[in-house]
Image (cartoon, rainbow, N blue to C red; front, top):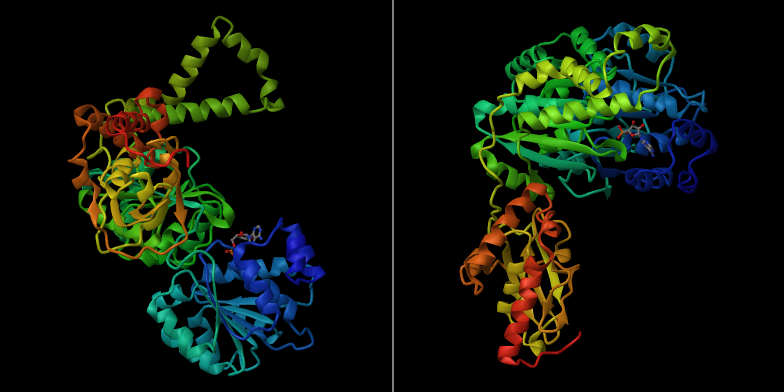
Length: 608
Ligand code: AMP
């Protein structure tokens, strides 16, 4: 709470959020709250969904209201009914100890007369969808010329949904001296245009990078034949008994079709698409929120503005066409600092799309093997067994204990377990008994577009000209140590005592760690990342160099095996430590160098 206090929030607000369990501000709150409280004019904040942005703008607005003025002081525009309701509910909770505050939401699809009656009673903060607000303005049922703050929430989504003209109309109706705060998860040109036309010298606040998803989301993908997409989905869902997910499809027919199949396969799910009435939509959402449904199968349009916390997974049954949609989809998991997984099921021709997403989001996408039938069975059995082990006996059941014990009196523990599991999982295991291998490849060969430099970073190695070190030595070391073959090396700058080099480390975590324990001549090699922008174009493809290796066949085959396992692990080298201690690439390199040193008696600098 201390940190919230330091941001300048007042007691009643601190009290309200403390009851909600807030302890420290999220990054967007750290940045936005003091700026709004200080009376900043306009603000553009690039923030993903689930980062706490409602409180970021909501808390300082609540604190800045003039309770004697019964007119609308703050107007929050948001793309969907769900989001409006969510924002209104959140603000009501935050202002529990400011009972004078009146917040209301207006949106389409419900009785406009009731909304007009509420507005007539006076509100301080109005949360609205653009369409319904325009309607109310035209009926002269609402007056927004007293508004001091306008918040455009999820501006990119509002524009995606075709609210451009409505936004122009509404903003023209508000006073010129208003403060405007624009929040958007992505910054396409249309949003930049709105910012340019309607905001005055806005402060820019970015948490995370442009077009970059939340840090808490891991991105994984499965690559299968198009005809096996459904079977892959089913295995992925069956492998995660605790899954609570949204599956995104491109069309409503796909959504309907998948729901039908999943329901037939015993998964609790339903579809959300444009053909549902508001009442049907509300019903599906209520069941999903109550976790009566394990998965919701939705189209992008239908899922806009959906606000569901604690999703464990987002599944892209089809990859969306643009990065903005992918960012929005994956941003529905990994919210409020929790871990989430964004899964994509792609066909043989879609590897390029994954690489583009990797580069634009600057996030690694990990290739995963489709679970086998045995993997699914094991996941289910272990989940059930863990539940049984941890459950507390219940008095309601205990009263039947004597009768139950009598039934199993003749049976030993092993037999009892076998029978219970056979009863519970016999059907499922039978279903998966002959499950075929759906993988079409072991692991992709990483490939870099030589013009795209987004994955390049600059590193320094502690050996230079004076040590007899050369670009060739550098490539030799990289060849031995790098977590995968074919890494693109950019510019190399030799110094007397150190060498700087640029390399595409897309998908590789903590590149320097792969050089630990390596020795060149008798220098213990240290590689560190530099805070410098890569400059030159790639010069060397390491693949080419690999063909010039000196150590022959044994090294190559060892290398290949390491490659496969490493990449499947997702960190490009996770299994390296499992190889025989004396057979690692590092040790071979060290040995090779020692022998080379004896032969050449090169006078390098020792013990640096
Ligand atoms: P939002 O991005 O505003 O939709 O917030 C996402 C979720 O994070 C909501 O459930 C909020 O209640 C929760 N939240 C927002 N700020 C905090 C915070 N500082 N600490 C804990 N939870 C928060």
